[in-house]
Amino acid sequence: MINVRQVNMLVGGRPVLNNVSFDLEPCRIHGIIGPNGVGKSTLLQLLSGVRKPSSGEVSLDGVRLSSYSRKALARKLAVLQQGGLPPAGFTVRQVVEMGRFPYQNWFGDEREDHSMLIDHALQSMGLAELSNRTLDQLSGGERQRVALAKVMVQEPEVILLDEPTTYLDIGYQVQLLDTVRQWQRQRGLTVVAVLHDLNLAALYCDRILVLHKGGIAAMGAPLDVLSEALIRDVYLTDVSIVKHPVTGTPQILLQPSP
Amino acid sequence: MLLLAVSIALSLSIGSSTISFADVWGILWHQLPWTDDAGNRWGAGEIAIVTQVRLSRVLLGVLVGACLGLAGAGFQGVLRNPLADPYTLGVSSGSSVGAAFLILFGYQTLLGEWTIPIIAFATGMATLLGVFFLARSRGVMQIETLVLAGVIIQSFLGAFVSFMVSLSDDVINQILFWLMGSLAMKSWADVYIVLPCLIIGLPLLIAYGQALNLFVLGERHAAHLGIRVERTKLIVLIGSTLLTAAAVSVSGVIGFVGLVVPHLIRLMVGPDYRLLIPLSAIGGGMFMLWSDTIARIALAPKEIPLGVVTALIGAPFFAYLLYRRKKGQEGLG
Image (cartoon, rainbow over all chains, first blue to last red):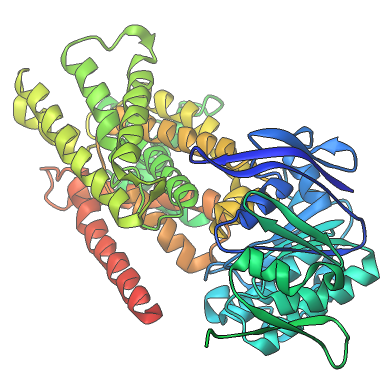
């Protein structure tokens, strides 16, 4: 699916990623975690192809990302970026329709009519009633749902999420990740999410990649990766790890110093 | 489109020498090659006024306005900056430096009849780069900083043009022409300079309409949807500068058209650039036509410089946009 080989990345002359190699498995939800400034968003930008690594290569289905045309790549891979959409004057429906851009020719036409697809995306994100409102009339949480609906109509095989739950309350956090997971299962998508919240990562991800000091500290299922020792090592803080009473996944309890 | 046609018709008939509406159209009708000369009852003077003076001026006004309206829409789209236009960014002044230099020192045929627009384009582009350089801090351009940089460069270049003009004869009229713009004393030759640039620029910008829509969501979003961001920006900026240079080469610096027109169109049809771009061309043509008609007749037989009229309308509008933006920010904070 996605293969990262010996990637080095310098940002402003400073090495951020150091000889990083890993493979992402198809039809899985991958979480990228790690402390602030470790290069999680940089890594996601490399995976999305908007930035090129200083050396090494990232490939999708065996083809280097840089060999895809921008539109061809956008048909395979979509990004839900940090911070969401700006409060623009477009209506919700217009913005969601923009997700079809990679499929349109120079005249903005497509061979088939995709209004059904757009209706469906609006429905499943609970945006049907808001579809004629403009973005500047929506709350941040609503705009984030519009952004996700736009990603949906892009019909990608891979979705990259950059801290999708920032600024959302816990209700919307769960709703958003539930939607992503449901959709991922229906379509067999590959999802890569940069997450700040370790507990959400443990609940939703099949595999977790821990980024630390420019390299990968650990990668695997949440149960195998998340340990008190690793967290102490990476985040320099003591935690207790308990089992979630319902799902059985590891959950992290913070521990203030005595 | 219909409104534009009506505007052209009316404006043709209004002028400092009184020729009736019917006569104007009678004269034009008889200029068409397949009509016979039987009904030709107009004097050579009247015919010359209509065909040589008014018709070319009206068409030139429409073309120049269309260029500036388009350029404004292009700059606003690619910079995602509601206050951008050829005038506020200093591109108009930049083009006028090149054009004025050539005309005042008699080099206008150095590279054939296209010398002036080519040089105006080059100096306009250089000015744009200068403004970007001034406005950019740590890789980002604040909306207000960009406009401030534009104003600084624009006043410097305006002074420079005035200085060059001072070295030649016929000082005052020329300074007025370059700083405030005018469509007076223009001929069909000028129409043929602007028209090709518009024929290149209009389809170019229309083709990038949907790309500019995606830019509204932010450059990153646009990139993720499959747009080659840097290439798109470069092409739209070059196209907009070309249109500006064409307009300035023939009419001097006429401010605020590119600012006012796209905003008015946006109020009418919404933010979709696929509509906004062609309608800005039409709207720009109309706006310029009426501004020029006012400039011609308000103090007839004296003319007001065209830039005075557009600035009297445009500057308060600019202030309004700034005010609304400020209020919007307070609302968010």
